[in-house]
Length: 286
Image 1 (cartoon, helix red, strand yellow):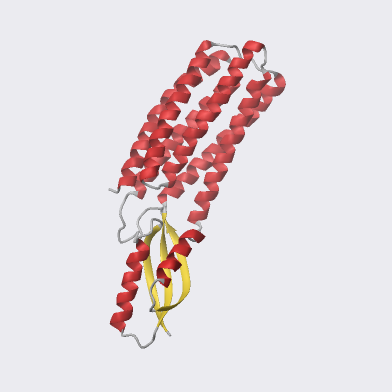
Image 2 (tube, one colour):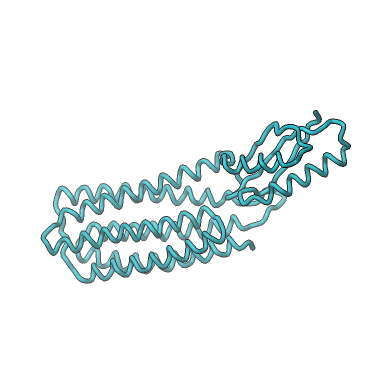
């Protein structure tokens, strides 16, 4: 099994365990203290559990090697499950936004409690540890599921910090900030969900390789003096990487063996790029 799949599996498991723990303490303290921001934060943790579970399942499917029915492997499972995560986030955010707006206009029943403060601090520390671990894993192996989890953990640190502010402000009889924070959390979850949805949608709709990687491919091709023209570059996503079809023009007087040998070497060089899964070179005689 590739290193990235092992790292993603661990990140998913640690995320599930950490978020179940946070959900339990946030929900319990949030409902007891009537903190809309903390309740919103607990729903966010529930969404995080689902996201970590989808990460685990999606990674498990994506790690299955290619077979006769799936010649290019199962890499797109990462994006299918990322889309599930995004839809659930948008749904949860909509419900939380409604509840927070009602709280803002009807008034907050938040009561200051040192338990709320303690939960916020524990949440920030837990999420910071998960963020640092996932960031380390992401630095070793690129994976959209790892990237999504890393951003989610970082965002949760920021969100819970604002929740902590809303709790501390009740000491000065400022209660409206609780509803504002709940709205902010809802909007942030929705924005993150939409971003993940768009990225997953683009890959599932076979978006082409980015311009930077395309330029690197051209640089490699132009390094061969025998290549007269690069007529076409077509690409399609395969998991987090790309399958590339490259059409080049060679001297028509070259032997079949020479042209195929050059094409094979070009394929190997392009395959060395981080973003490339496999390269197929087509030769046209000029």
